[in-house]
Image 1 (cartoon, each protein chain N blue to C red):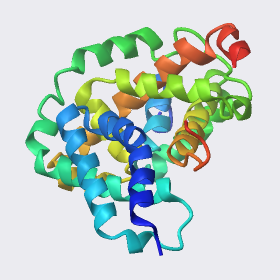
Image 2 (spheres, chains in turn blue, orange):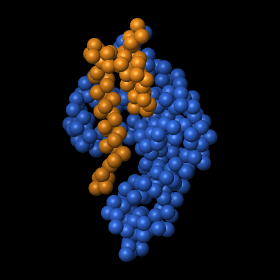
Image 3 (tube, rainbow over the protein chains, first blue to last red):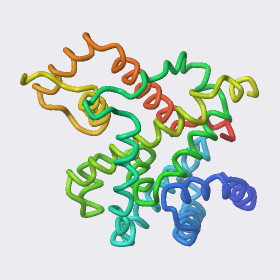
Image 4 (cartoon, each protein chain N blue to C red):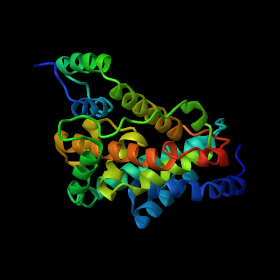
Length: 196
Length: 66
């Protein structure tokens, strides 16, 4: 049997971790607080559901994802409101990468052996910073895909987007993320990596 | 040519492949281009690195305070 006060303490210790992910996905502090509070309430109301599971954090993240989806669903109109606001910057990124004839402006750089990067905490800090730097609406749909792992069909349905619109946004988000990683991690002359 | 693609178009297809299934004609065009091009396979490997990075990121391990 789970000792209840102890369980509460354990839950509390994961609060800031959960909040970080909720914020990254929702891009709104109040919504994120709501989602995390609802997660805590749900966890406290059925501690027996956690019995026999060793991975408290994993269980909580599972609940959080559902609560975050509820938030996105209920704020649907606000979530995708500014979706078209950043179309100009993306054209620039294309122009930066490619010549008018469709060739690369500069040969893409070899990112080397990723195994080493994927063991580095600093790499993931940069990855998260790059995701945070995405324009709000882009960041939201990108993480719906990559963190919530929703299908494109489900994202379109939940957010009332056309598939064309969604594909364009995901394309922009991925291009920007690649660019940001290139600039802040892979392109650097190894100074970041040495520090890890 | 029906199967001719620029690097810009190929890069767009490589990115699109993360989110949707490509039509057969695009898949064939992609393969042909990747065999003949030096830059695009490098770009493709960058995207693969991103893909595995995102996968590792969302499947954080319990013992890591990532």
